[in-house]
Image (cartoon, rainbow, N blue to C red; front, side, top):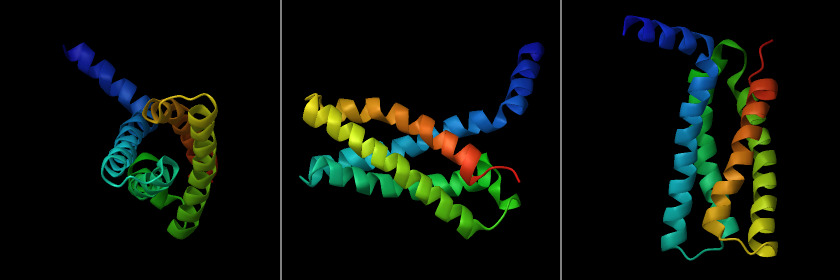
Length: 139
């Protein structure tokens, strides 16, 4: 049992950033989906508009935790500059998400709720790449 615990600690230390990204990213996705599905069920608004609102809630949640916990960005520079870069990169992935969502729902006639899940995979990968290599990159 002690060896397993030591192995887990070693792996955590080695892959801490990726592990925390997955945890915070998962929680961010949960915020996004919760807002999306709640608004979709009570508002009757267009799904792409609801997606923007869910995105905004998730971005605010994500920045706080990515900035302070995952990429330890407070040690790397100005918070306003990083917030602007973070939001810009998220806008880019939002536009990609919106385009993929519209394509899969409008052209391929997929279920908007299922396509939201499918498209989320692409968005999560792109968000990590942009955060790691552009927004919170080490100087």
